[in-house]
Length: 468
Ligand code: PEP
Ligand code: CO
Image (cartoon, rainbow, N blue to C red; front, side, top):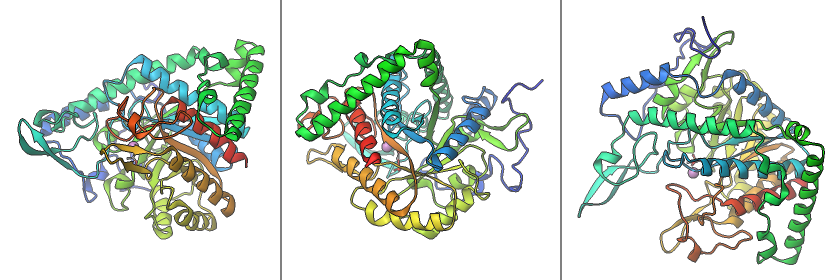
């Protein structure tokens, strides 16, 4: 008997892509920055992952695809966010609940401000693999200098700088799977229970707006928005719990960078009564800026799966290359299939984005345009701390919105690195985080994230900028 989303015939290939299989990426010019030494352990880990149940289902993936298609048409907005990299150690109820809460609260601000449904996609339950600019790192180890593999995230190796921790370990893929599964289980339970905090304005931490060192115009704008939001939430509450639950019914999806193709392949399968292969580690896997070369293994793998697929688009992308990329990943020009996550930087977006928008529009290619105003706005302080400036993030957002308006195209979503915790990793925002604050609570092992207050503030500003 087959049960939903158990593998059927793993050797079956996707129609019209007869040379594609879940493992065909291995024949692409391979530029993996790390290598597993123990082939027997690699085979044991991937075999086990092939046998384990899927983390998500094909019908959830199809529902997300439909919602992405709606966002492409401007009938919905997508909010994607979470950690730069989750760690296995961070799989704790309070962190998970706080991340979910900030995403849900931001989405309510956007629903309210944009008057459109919002789909939330977490950068979590599997965001364990990280691309690095350099494959190795040289530092002090027990008194002498040594060169070891960089830390590629807990799905690949471990952060401490010693040879054992930094050796790529295939068993971490099974550990990553288990932690993704525990995270998802908790998220699904929280959402099933209604996650009541959400509907009670008194549980929202908006008081920082009142105390913030802001100009009067922005302060009164925030106060007005908080008040109308609180009224809206109370109104929904008065409809009764059941109605509230229905009217804010929370669809929630997961995403991660599909960096480790051994992991992705092992959970990629055909399912009964559906055509093609689904990557069942996540709803929306994406290809990072460093791995989107056209003849590389990632494009080869992603072009064959049924999931919607994200691709990061940096400032060096040229229109011809983008058209080829789109035609490779979405040859049938299917709606809801391809998400372009543009990350150009506040200083480049006004010049580099419009040519892409015009070209894709004139070719009538179906894509969802999203903006990631985080990844090209990194800076390092004089003290050597990696950070991002709230104002740069906001500037890239505003310039992106402007570029879409001018081109007559649709910005259908945003992608943020954020956490529900009170960290001090990004500078600025209403709570005024300064360089001196950065060391107070800097917890990220990778890129700096917006904290709870900065995230909520950005949602308010985004809602305002989209309405202008
Ligand atoms: C990321 O999303 O964490 C990331 C590394 O992004 P990019 O590939 O755009 O640099
Ligand atoms: Co990042």
